[in-house]
Image 1 (cartoon, rainbow, N blue to C red):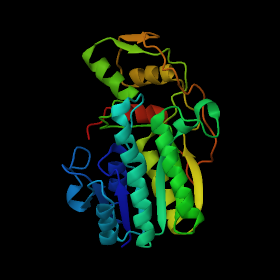
Image 2: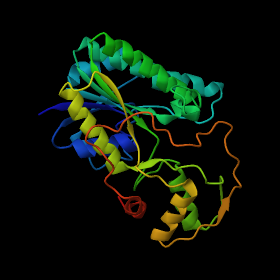
Image 3: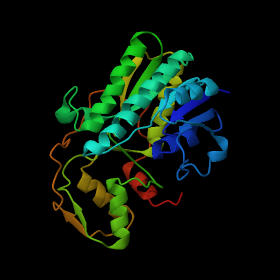
Length: 295
């Protein structure tokens, strides 16, 4: 049985990916103490947990023990606006952890990596212009990765993500906040809502990661970049209104009452192809209905 190693396995995307890969793969997850089982309670007994304590030695041990055929690197620390107190967390989670991971992979001859990055490295559609410091630290890892792939130490596929959504999601994403406000009746301040809401349903996201992982294990990629994106996204306001319509809800919406961020991506970013053989399968209307599933 092939082995996969997932960083960020306790997060929303990582947990869904692990669930999708089981039981065909033996799944190892890099975690910190105390272990957060919010998203993985139902599959925790099937995962081999390896603990990371911010040191290279712990990462080296995790790769030595797991000896995976493939690594999925999903761990990250996000903040839209940062202060000085956020800088150590951004550097440690988005740069240092990744650097340790790449070095340990090379040391133990782990050949294949699939990595998640963000469209926020492409402000105003530029090849590279970070929206915020989070995006800059994600690009820093990509630059480190280029050394390891160019040196022939490993092969990789990078997947660029805009936004994701699905049932059972506790992240403070806009659709989750709308859902909460619709249920409580509280007024919700929103932006004008005219920018594209470029989001992909969680099942389609995990399918993209799984497909890319299988292809990189076959040696089809050296260091390729792909984008996970819907084919025809609506605006944020249109998406919210459709969500309310299909679930028969009303929202006390204050459109335009929330000022736009100083740096905001206002257009569709399409710089990379979608992963070969992948396209979204879940229609937006179905995905928005599924938000109300109990999981």
